Image 1 (cartoon, helix red, strand yellow):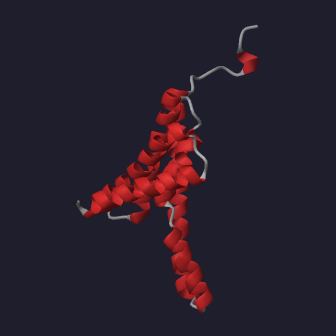
Image 2 (image 1 turned 30 degrees about the vertical axis):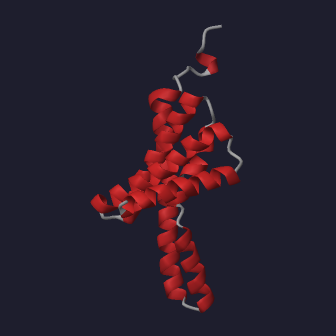
Image 3 (image 1 turned 120 degrees about the horizontal axis):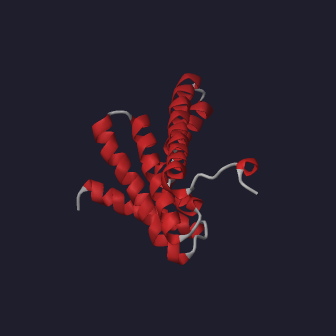
Length: 153
């Protein structure tokens, strides 16, 4: 097995574990775990081609968000069920740890730099999910309706 395949397997298993921890229904766990592997796979591909970690997180989050919206529409389940589990591999936990470590060690400059990078990645994740949600609402999930005061009575 290659290094990337092992990483995808671990992303799948970690997401499966978090799905169990978050008490996702058993019938939805495979779809949530696949979303986690998909998010990490998208990140790995984008990291090699984009060259920017923030952009990689942003686009991988869009991929996860669109996958979650599609899975939710097809399975008639809430999208947050898939988003919460599938986004776990992208959460910058190591950056948060390093930020706190540098702060406790008294390295204010290193703590600020690491903290800023971590916040940038977290913002990229949040932005990507927001874009995916908006795009899915515009394209296929919600039919446009007139406001109530413009409808015929």
